[in-house]
Image (cartoon, rainbow, N blue to C red; front, side, top):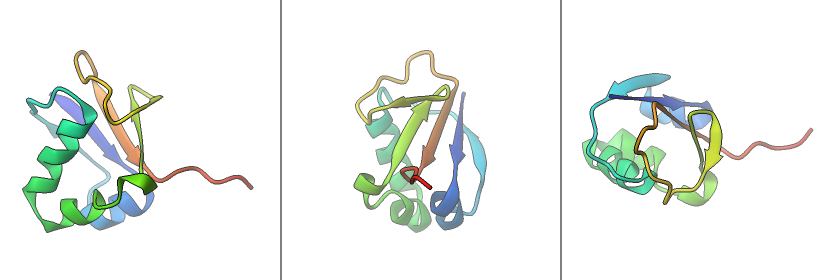
Length: 82
């Protein structure tokens, strides 16, 4: 099982702050593909990956990062200064 957290507009589009998933995804990109295929709200949230960041166990990661051993995946928009 893996905990998936959604922040800011990602959470707003999906309608959930977090969920626990069983996944066979090997990488973050595979997980995103699984989520997109679930229903339209996920497809909308993950439509533009250039405006999305991911953290694995609270460390910034890339979309090709492996999920083996990861307990938490968080999706959020890029942070802005200020």
